[in-house]
Image 1 (cartoon, helix red, strand yellow):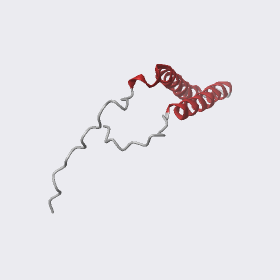
Image 2 (image 1 turned 90 degrees about the horizontal axis):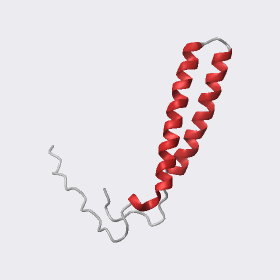
Image 3 (image 1 turned 135 degrees about the vertical axis):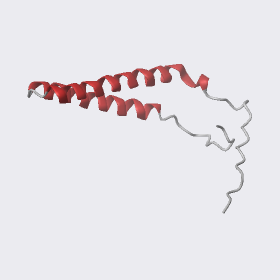
Length: 90
């Protein structure tokens, strides 16, 4: 929900999420390989699942980055009125 007081210089967290997903994929893939080599199939499968999840997250993040800012409300969209909550009762 937009309140109208968002910072003008706010940055999207997608690039950070991209690098964290890439870091997680690298470590999960390395863990999969290492556990496979030492004969721990359960841990290798767990690391493989994490690697697949990191790849899916990378794909989603890249899709959102390539979409650009068109899905963000622009300055021509008026801010929404914040919801008014009832006063708390004691």
